[in-house]
Length: 221
Image (cartoon, rainbow, N blue to C red):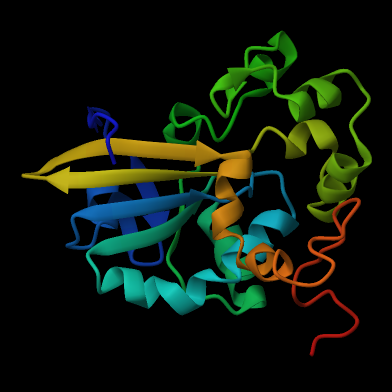
């Protein structure tokens, strides 16, 4: 909250269930907007399983945020029809917009082009040469990245062209300001499942991506 407000001068457009929308429209009358950059690229066949695990918590608290002057949206680059089909599969009701064909995800360092990837021209999480990106381009992705990529129906290079993140915006006297963005481990606090595991006797107790989408577990209790 002590960071400077940075005016958003570019006009971004999104596809939503209610039709075409601007970034200002996503505020829906509130003065604050939180955007979760959900990893679901145009070539994905399903949403990222880790983002899906995080988003499982959105339904419950989005109404509380909306009634406290904060709108929460997920935004992804996949076309709206793909997002809607996946949203229905997951049983989610929170608002989800498509930025397909636009610069929004790229401008907020949540998506990268294949050319950027091949050139190593990547800045993610406020640093260069992200280790997952580097591993993917070197042909030696870690097992976790390969497994998650397979779960989205893509190869690793395609999978990691999308990245998870959260961006915050304020609307003051008709002007939109970018106030904050966080990525990678900065999102741990949003991952409700881990907040519970951190308090369990064995903690996270993991060696890789053990989680699945909530409709993919054998035991769905």
